[in-house]
Image (cartoon, rainbow, N blue to C red; front, top):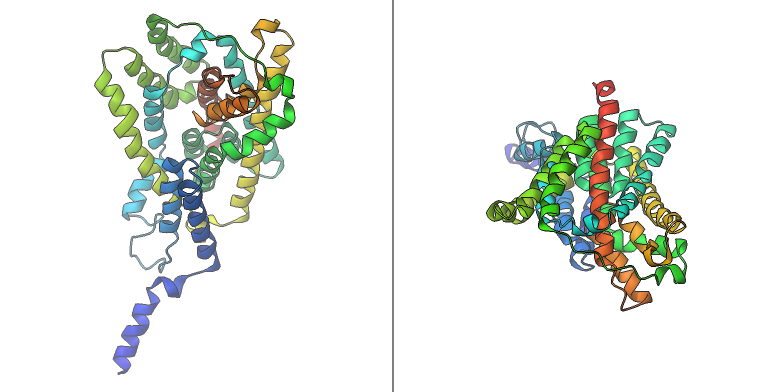
Length: 386
Protein backbone atom coordinates (compact mmCIF):
# COMPACT_ATOMS: atom_id res chain seq x y z
CA UNK A 1 0.00 0.00 0.00
CA UNK A 2 2.84 2.37 0.90
CA UNK A 3 4.50 1.60 -2.41
CA UNK A 4 1.31 2.46 -4.29
CA UNK A 5 1.01 5.76 -2.42
CA UNK A 6 4.59 6.65 -3.30
CA UNK A 7 3.91 5.88 -6.97
CA UNK A 8 0.78 8.01 -6.84
CA UNK A 9 2.71 10.90 -5.30
CA UNK A 10 5.35 10.57 -8.02
CA UNK A 11 2.71 10.60 -10.76
CA UNK A 12 1.04 13.69 -9.24
CA UNK A 13 4.42 15.44 -8.99
CA UNK A 14 4.77 15.36 -12.78
CA UNK A 15 1.25 16.59 -13.57
CA UNK A 16 0.37 20.13 -14.53
CA UNK A 17 -1.86 20.43 -11.43
CA UNK A 18 1.15 20.08 -9.14
CA UNK A 19 3.23 22.64 -11.02
CA UNK A 20 0.67 25.33 -11.83
CA UNK A 21 1.39 28.93 -10.76
CA UNK A 22 -0.67 32.11 -10.98
CA UNK A 23 1.56 33.11 -13.92
CA UNK A 24 0.40 30.09 -15.93
CA UNK A 25 -3.22 31.11 -15.36
CA UNK A 26 -2.47 34.66 -16.54
CA UNK A 27 -0.68 33.54 -19.69
CA UNK A 28 -3.29 30.90 -20.60
CA UNK A 29 -5.94 33.62 -20.24
CA UNK A 30 -3.87 35.80 -22.61
CA UNK A 31 -3.72 32.94 -25.11
CA UNK A 32 -7.49 32.50 -24.94
CA UNK A 33 -7.92 36.26 -25.43
CA UNK A 34 -5.73 36.14 -28.57
CA UNK A 35 -7.84 33.28 -29.92
CA UNK A 36 -11.00 35.28 -29.17
CA UNK A 37 -9.67 38.28 -31.08
CA UNK A 38 -8.69 36.09 -34.03
CA UNK A 39 -11.80 33.90 -34.27
CA UNK A 40 -14.57 36.17 -32.99
CA UNK A 41 -13.27 39.59 -34.06
CA UNK A 42 -11.29 38.40 -37.12
CA UNK A 43 -8.20 40.41 -36.06
CA UNK A 44 -5.27 38.98 -38.02
CA UNK A 45 -6.30 35.32 -37.55
CA UNK A 46 -3.33 34.02 -39.55
CA UNK A 47 -1.07 35.48 -36.87
CA UNK A 48 -3.14 35.39 -33.70
CA UNK A 49 -4.44 31.81 -33.97
CA UNK A 50 -0.91 30.27 -34.03
CA UNK A 51 0.38 32.75 -31.43
CA UNK A 52 -2.65 32.35 -29.12
CA UNK A 53 -2.51 28.57 -29.30
CA UNK A 54 1.27 28.74 -28.83
CA UNK A 55 0.81 30.79 -25.64
CA UNK A 56 -1.46 28.08 -24.22
CA UNK A 57 0.94 25.36 -25.39
CA UNK A 58 3.91 27.08 -23.77
CA UNK A 59 2.10 27.49 -20.46
CA UNK A 60 0.94 23.96 -19.79
CA UNK A 61 2.76 23.45 -16.46
CA UNK A 62 5.33 20.69 -16.10
CA UNK A 63 8.11 19.80 -13.68
CA UNK A 64 10.96 21.95 -14.91
CA UNK A 65 14.48 20.64 -14.45
CA UNK A 66 13.34 17.01 -14.55
CA UNK A 67 14.97 16.43 -17.93
CA UNK A 68 11.71 15.73 -19.74
CA UNK A 69 12.82 17.83 -22.74
CA UNK A 70 9.37 19.22 -23.49
CA UNK A 71 9.64 22.96 -22.70
CA UNK A 72 10.63 25.45 -25.36
CA UNK A 73 13.68 26.51 -23.34
CA UNK A 74 14.87 22.96 -22.63
CA UNK A 75 17.73 21.79 -24.80
CA UNK A 76 16.82 18.85 -26.99
CA UNK A 77 13.07 19.42 -26.95
CA UNK A 78 11.16 19.58 -30.24
CA UNK A 79 9.88 23.06 -29.44
CA UNK A 80 13.42 24.20 -28.68
CA UNK A 81 14.58 23.02 -32.12
CA UNK A 82 11.69 24.84 -33.80
CA UNK A 83 12.43 27.95 -31.72
CA UNK A 84 15.95 27.93 -33.16
CA UNK A 85 14.53 29.61 -36.27
CA UNK A 86 13.39 32.52 -34.10
CA UNK A 87 16.49 32.81 -31.93
CA UNK A 88 18.85 32.76 -34.92
CA UNK A 89 16.69 35.04 -37.06
CA UNK A 90 15.98 32.42 -39.74
CA UNK A 91 12.22 32.81 -40.03
CA UNK A 92 12.04 36.62 -40.62
CA UNK A 93 13.95 36.65 -43.95
CA UNK A 94 11.75 33.80 -45.20
CA UNK A 95 8.66 35.83 -44.25
CA UNK A 96 10.13 38.79 -46.16
CA UNK A 97 10.65 36.56 -49.20
CA UNK A 98 6.94 35.77 -49.19
CA UNK A 99 5.97 39.40 -48.60
CA UNK A 100 8.09 40.45 -51.58
CA UNK A 101 6.45 37.84 -53.77
CA UNK A 102 2.99 39.12 -52.77
CA UNK A 103 3.69 42.85 -52.96
CA UNK A 104 2.92 45.16 -55.86
CA UNK A 105 5.11 48.27 -55.67
CA UNK A 106 3.19 50.03 -58.47
CA UNK A 107 1.53 52.53 -56.11
CA UNK A 108 4.92 53.55 -54.75
CA UNK A 109 6.51 53.79 -58.19
CA UNK A 110 3.65 55.89 -59.53
CA UNK A 111 4.00 58.48 -56.75
CA UNK A 112 7.50 58.21 -55.21
CA UNK A 113 7.04 61.17 -52.85
CA UNK A 114 4.70 59.00 -50.77
CA UNK A 115 7.82 57.06 -49.76
CA UNK A 116 8.51 59.97 -47.38
CA UNK A 117 5.43 59.01 -45.37
CA UNK A 118 6.86 55.54 -44.82
CA UNK A 119 10.10 57.15 -43.64
CA UNK A 120 8.29 59.61 -41.35
CA UNK A 121 6.41 56.78 -39.63
CA UNK A 122 9.74 55.32 -38.49
CA UNK A 123 10.19 58.21 -36.05
CA UNK A 124 8.37 56.07 -33.49
CA UNK A 125 11.30 53.66 -33.55
CA UNK A 126 13.89 56.24 -32.60
CA UNK A 127 11.74 58.09 -30.05
CA UNK A 128 11.02 54.79 -28.28
CA UNK A 129 14.72 53.90 -28.47
CA UNK A 130 15.57 57.09 -26.53
CA UNK A 131 12.72 56.51 -24.05
CA UNK A 132 13.79 52.91 -23.38
CA UNK A 133 17.34 54.09 -22.71
CA UNK A 134 16.01 56.62 -20.20
CA UNK A 135 14.10 53.81 -18.44
CA UNK A 136 17.26 51.80 -17.90
CA UNK A 137 17.32 49.34 -20.82
CA UNK A 138 20.67 48.77 -22.51
CA UNK A 139 21.30 50.27 -25.95
CA UNK A 140 20.79 46.89 -27.59
CA UNK A 141 17.54 46.20 -25.73
CA UNK A 142 16.26 49.72 -26.42
CA UNK A 143 16.91 49.33 -30.14
CA UNK A 144 15.06 46.01 -30.28
CA UNK A 145 12.11 47.47 -28.34
CA UNK A 146 11.97 50.55 -30.57
CA UNK A 147 11.46 48.49 -33.74
CA UNK A 148 8.02 47.50 -32.39
CA UNK A 149 6.91 50.96 -33.52
CA UNK A 150 7.23 49.91 -37.13
CA UNK A 151 4.46 47.32 -36.55
CA UNK A 152 6.70 44.80 -38.28
CA UNK A 153 6.87 41.49 -36.41
CA UNK A 154 9.55 39.78 -38.54
CA UNK A 155 11.86 42.81 -38.38
CA UNK A 156 11.39 43.08 -34.61
CA UNK A 157 12.24 39.39 -34.20
CA UNK A 158 15.26 39.66 -36.51
CA UNK A 159 16.76 42.64 -34.66
CA UNK A 160 16.06 41.29 -31.18
CA UNK A 161 17.63 37.94 -32.14
CA UNK A 162 20.85 39.81 -32.90
CA UNK A 163 20.87 42.44 -30.17
CA UNK A 164 18.65 41.28 -27.30
CA UNK A 165 17.79 37.57 -27.58
CA UNK A 166 16.66 37.53 -23.95
CA UNK A 167 13.74 39.80 -24.94
CA UNK A 168 12.63 38.01 -28.11
CA UNK A 169 9.45 36.58 -26.60
CA UNK A 170 8.13 39.85 -25.18
CA UNK A 171 9.14 41.90 -28.24
CA UNK A 172 7.65 39.43 -30.72
CA UNK A 173 4.35 39.15 -28.86
CA UNK A 174 4.12 42.94 -28.52
CA UNK A 175 4.93 43.54 -32.21
CA UNK A 176 2.41 41.00 -33.50
CA UNK A 177 -0.23 42.16 -31.01
CA UNK A 178 -0.08 45.71 -32.28
CA UNK A 179 -0.04 44.51 -35.89
CA UNK A 180 -3.28 42.68 -35.20
CA UNK A 181 -4.81 45.67 -33.41
CA UNK A 182 -4.16 48.17 -36.21
CA UNK A 183 -7.93 48.57 -36.89
CA UNK A 184 -8.45 49.44 -33.22
CA UNK A 185 -5.45 51.66 -32.50
CA UNK A 186 -5.06 53.75 -35.64
CA UNK A 187 -8.55 55.25 -36.35
CA UNK A 188 -8.79 57.34 -33.14
CA UNK A 189 -5.29 58.76 -33.71
CA UNK A 190 -6.06 59.62 -37.34
CA UNK A 191 -9.34 61.33 -36.44
CA UNK A 192 -7.70 63.26 -33.62
CA UNK A 193 -4.99 64.67 -35.90
CA UNK A 194 -7.07 65.44 -39.02
CA UNK A 195 -10.02 67.65 -39.83
CA UNK A 196 -13.07 66.51 -41.78
CA UNK A 197 -11.94 68.70 -44.68
CA UNK A 198 -8.57 66.94 -44.77
CA UNK A 199 -10.18 63.51 -44.62
CA UNK A 200 -12.30 64.44 -47.67
CA UNK A 201 -9.28 65.18 -49.88
CA UNK A 202 -9.41 63.21 -53.12
CA UNK A 203 -6.06 62.30 -54.63
CA UNK A 204 -5.25 62.02 -58.31
CA UNK A 205 -5.44 58.47 -59.70
CA UNK A 206 -1.99 56.82 -59.73
CA UNK A 207 -0.26 56.68 -63.08
CA UNK A 208 0.24 53.43 -64.94
CA UNK A 209 3.60 51.78 -64.18
CA UNK A 210 5.44 49.88 -66.91
CA UNK A 211 6.65 46.31 -66.59
CA UNK A 212 10.25 47.48 -67.00
CA UNK A 213 9.91 49.78 -63.99
CA UNK A 214 8.53 46.93 -61.91
CA UNK A 215 11.46 44.67 -62.88
CA UNK A 216 14.14 47.30 -62.30
CA UNK A 217 12.76 48.44 -58.93
CA UNK A 218 13.74 45.36 -56.86
CA UNK A 219 17.21 45.32 -58.41
CA UNK A 220 18.04 48.97 -57.85
CA UNK A 221 16.03 49.05 -54.62
CA UNK A 222 18.22 46.27 -53.22
CA UNK A 223 21.44 48.04 -54.21
CA UNK A 224 20.39 51.44 -52.84
CA UNK A 225 18.90 50.29 -49.52
CA UNK A 226 21.65 47.80 -48.65
CA UNK A 227 24.40 50.28 -49.50
CA UNK A 228 22.73 52.62 -46.99
CA UNK A 229 22.02 49.88 -44.45
CA UNK A 230 24.10 46.69 -44.97
CA UNK A 231 22.77 45.34 -41.67
CA UNK A 232 19.35 44.95 -43.26
CA UNK A 233 20.69 42.72 -46.05
CA UNK A 234 19.00 39.45 -44.95
CA UNK A 235 15.57 41.14 -44.81
CA UNK A 236 15.88 43.55 -47.74
CA UNK A 237 17.62 40.97 -49.91
CA UNK A 238 14.83 38.45 -49.49
CA UNK A 239 12.11 41.11 -49.86
CA UNK A 240 13.42 42.37 -53.19
CA UNK A 241 14.28 38.86 -54.40
CA UNK A 242 10.71 37.74 -53.76
CA UNK A 243 9.41 40.79 -55.63
CA UNK A 244 11.70 40.09 -58.60
CA UNK A 245 10.38 36.51 -58.74
CA UNK A 246 6.90 38.01 -59.05
CA UNK A 247 7.58 40.84 -61.48
CA UNK A 248 10.04 39.10 -63.82
CA UNK A 249 7.20 37.01 -65.23
CA UNK A 250 9.49 34.04 -65.84
CA UNK A 251 9.50 32.49 -62.36
CA UNK A 252 5.79 32.24 -61.68
CA UNK A 253 6.05 28.88 -59.88
CA UNK A 254 8.77 30.15 -57.54
CA UNK A 255 6.83 33.34 -56.82
CA UNK A 256 3.66 31.37 -56.05
CA UNK A 257 5.59 29.00 -53.77
CA UNK A 258 7.14 31.91 -51.86
CA UNK A 259 3.84 33.82 -51.63
CA UNK A 260 1.69 30.90 -50.52
CA UNK A 261 3.04 27.56 -49.20
CA UNK A 262 6.40 28.87 -47.94
CA UNK A 263 5.14 31.92 -46.08
CA UNK A 264 2.23 29.90 -44.66
CA UNK A 265 4.56 27.21 -43.28
CA UNK A 266 6.94 29.76 -41.79
CA UNK A 267 4.05 31.75 -40.29
CA UNK A 268 2.79 28.58 -38.55
CA UNK A 269 6.25 27.79 -37.13
CA UNK A 270 6.94 31.38 -36.16
CA UNK A 271 3.54 31.93 -34.53
CA UNK A 272 3.48 28.72 -32.51
CA UNK A 273 7.07 29.09 -31.22
CA UNK A 274 6.78 32.80 -30.46
CA UNK A 275 3.60 32.04 -28.55
CA UNK A 276 5.20 29.14 -26.68
CA UNK A 277 8.14 31.37 -25.71
CA UNK A 278 5.82 33.15 -23.26
CA UNK A 279 6.39 30.39 -20.72
CA UNK A 280 5.26 32.07 -17.48
CA UNK A 281 8.31 31.12 -15.41
CA UNK A 282 10.63 33.05 -17.76
CA UNK A 283 8.35 35.50 -19.57
CA UNK A 284 6.07 37.08 -16.98
CA UNK A 285 8.21 39.90 -15.58
CA UNK A 286 7.87 43.65 -15.08
CA UNK A 287 10.31 44.07 -17.96
CA UNK A 288 7.91 42.29 -20.32
CA UNK A 289 5.03 44.49 -19.21
CA UNK A 290 7.15 47.62 -19.74
CA UNK A 291 8.02 46.40 -23.24
CA UNK A 292 4.30 46.16 -24.04
CA UNK A 293 3.75 49.72 -22.82
CA UNK A 294 6.72 51.07 -24.78
CA UNK A 295 5.62 49.12 -27.85
CA UNK A 296 2.15 50.65 -27.72
CA UNK A 297 3.61 54.14 -27.35
CA UNK A 298 6.03 53.50 -30.22
CA UNK A 299 3.26 52.34 -32.54
CA UNK A 300 1.06 55.32 -31.71
CA UNK A 301 3.92 57.76 -32.27
CA UNK A 302 4.71 56.09 -35.61
CA UNK A 303 1.07 56.43 -36.71
CA UNK A 304 0.96 60.07 -35.64
CA UNK A 305 4.29 60.76 -37.34
CA UNK A 306 3.01 59.59 -40.72
CA UNK A 307 -0.22 61.61 -40.45
CA UNK A 308 1.52 64.80 -39.30
CA UNK A 309 4.17 64.56 -42.02
CA UNK A 310 1.45 64.23 -44.67
CA UNK A 311 -0.08 67.46 -43.35
CA UNK A 312 3.34 69.15 -43.53
CA UNK A 313 3.84 67.97 -47.11
CA UNK A 314 0.49 69.50 -48.06
CA UNK A 315 1.83 72.92 -47.13
CA UNK A 316 4.18 72.71 -50.11
CA UNK A 317 1.89 70.98 -52.62
CA UNK A 318 -0.61 72.46 -55.05
CA UNK A 319 -4.32 71.81 -54.51
CA UNK A 320 -4.43 69.12 -57.18
CA UNK A 321 -1.42 67.29 -55.72
CA UNK A 322 -2.46 67.38 -52.07
CA UNK A 323 -2.26 64.20 -50.02
CA UNK A 324 -5.10 62.89 -47.89
CA UNK A 325 -3.32 62.73 -44.49
CA UNK A 326 -5.22 59.56 -43.60
CA UNK A 327 -2.77 57.60 -45.73
CA UNK A 328 0.14 58.85 -43.63
CA UNK A 329 -0.89 56.35 -40.95
CA UNK A 330 -0.21 53.57 -43.47
CA UNK A 331 3.50 54.40 -43.21
CA UNK A 332 3.83 51.72 -40.54
CA UNK A 333 4.68 48.39 -42.12
CA UNK A 334 1.57 46.44 -41.14
CA UNK A 335 0.81 45.38 -44.73
CA UNK A 336 -1.94 45.60 -45.88
CA UNK A 337 -3.94 46.30 -42.70
CA UNK A 338 -2.90 49.94 -42.33
CA UNK A 339 -3.82 50.58 -45.96
CA UNK A 340 -7.22 48.97 -45.38
CA UNK A 341 -7.78 51.19 -42.34
CA UNK A 342 -7.03 54.24 -44.50
CA UNK A 343 -9.53 53.05 -47.10
CA UNK A 344 -12.16 52.40 -44.44
CA UNK A 345 -11.81 55.83 -42.83
CA UNK A 346 -11.77 57.60 -46.19
CA UNK A 347 -14.93 55.76 -47.25
CA UNK A 348 -16.68 56.72 -44.00
CA UNK A 349 -16.25 60.39 -44.92
CA UNK A 350 -16.85 59.95 -48.65
CA UNK A 351 -17.99 56.55 -49.98
CA UNK A 352 -16.62 57.43 -53.42
CA UNK A 353 -13.13 58.26 -52.18
CA UNK A 354 -10.84 55.30 -52.87
CA UNK A 355 -7.62 55.58 -50.88
CA UNK A 356 -6.47 51.95 -50.83
CA UNK A 357 -4.01 52.13 -53.74
CA UNK A 358 -2.62 55.46 -52.53
CA UNK A 359 -2.23 54.07 -49.00
CA UNK A 360 -0.34 51.02 -50.28
CA UNK A 361 2.54 53.30 -51.30
CA UNK A 362 3.53 54.43 -47.79
CA UNK A 363 2.54 50.99 -46.48
CA UNK A 364 5.12 49.12 -48.57
CA UNK A 365 7.59 51.98 -48.05
CA UNK A 366 7.15 51.35 -44.33
CA UNK A 367 8.24 47.73 -44.78
CA UNK A 368 11.41 48.91 -46.48
CA UNK A 369 11.89 51.73 -43.98
CA UNK A 370 11.64 49.52 -40.90
CA UNK A 371 14.13 47.04 -42.39
CA UNK A 372 16.54 49.89 -43.20
CA UNK A 373 16.14 51.28 -39.67
CA UNK A 374 16.80 47.82 -38.19
CA UNK A 375 19.91 47.47 -40.35
CA UNK A 376 21.23 50.85 -39.21
CA UNK A 377 20.67 50.01 -35.54
CA UNK A 378 22.25 46.58 -36.02
CA UNK A 379 25.32 48.13 -37.64
CA UNK A 380 25.68 50.67 -34.84
CA UNK A 381 25.13 48.37 -31.89
CA UNK A 382 26.02 44.80 -32.83
CA UNK A 383 29.71 45.02 -31.89
CA UNK A 384 28.87 46.45 -28.48
CA UNK A 385 26.48 43.53 -27.93
CA UNK A 386 29.25 41.00 -28.32
